[in-house]
Length: 56
Image (tube, rainbow, N blue to C red; front, top):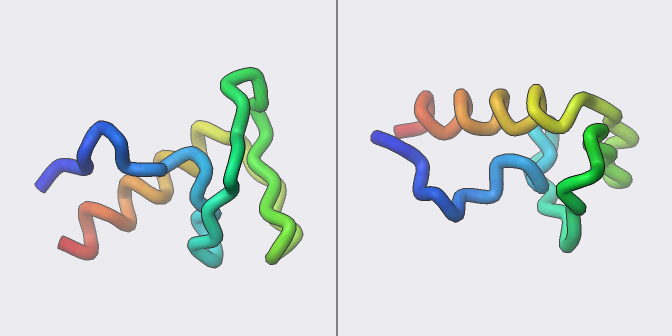
């Protein structure tokens, strides 16, 4: 199964699942205030998409 195009893979924390209200396209670093996680935005999105496909 594929994730919908609107699936929030970038603004969702790959560690705790918290979704940021705003994540500008210019932000290349994802920061989660809940877990103090800092990671590359694209890596974070890729991890979320991998979790999505494993959950299905």
